[in-house]
Length: 338
Image (cartoon, rainbow, N blue to C red; front, side, top):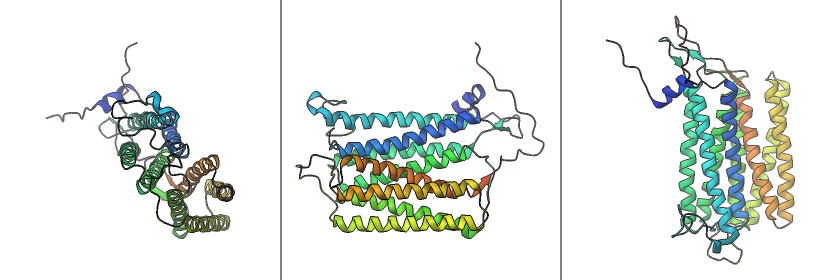
């Protein structure tokens, strides 16, 4: 008895639309760009004191889905950030569909193999977006509790992490990862990523105890993290110095051993980014943290996080997944009638 083919909306779409590898890369990159945009615009909500521009969630007010004229500028800013979540969702959806429908090789039964690992990374982004939207709603409903605000940003950085991984994986095959360096070098790159992650997390605590609660400064209802701001800022600076020192060590190690040129270039990019970020951080600290510099600092933190994540990804390679032995040629995809 013949097996019943596994027919799903995705498989039916894949029979009619098979995007090129370049389309998959662009879709994954678009999702990454939007994940950065949502971090920066979320920071803009806070820095413009628009954190409670919409007083509830998921509606903007109890009576209206959109901001009213009485809510003014702050309502527009927060509502715009909420609407950008839909743009982000669309970008992630495009990445999922492109990864699912890109069919690089045939299977043993003649049905093209789709990129399971890449598609899973796209779905991981989708669920991170959904969970972070709920977390954002909790943040509003709890009156901008600083701990939920910090968790909201960390979750957004988690989204950036997965988006970066999907973008890099879209340039590779689906075979097993093969290291290009010795194990100690690979572990050093992981340590660097971990320290950069701690640096970003410490920055969220500095923000939670700092000068920008997300609402007008005369609003005393917004709690702050009950830790000394200057001590937190110093700890954040110490982690920055550690990150710079460690990135220098990575550059020297990469120069001493055989590593791919891409890894060396990414290590240099990270060091440059850390130095620029350090300058911005010191200037904003001694100028009473102006909003524009804080926004640039948030953008820089996101880009540095991406730069650090890309270093270990350059230390291994993935070839195309081997087709099963004796696999027949794939069926030609059906095209819609013109």
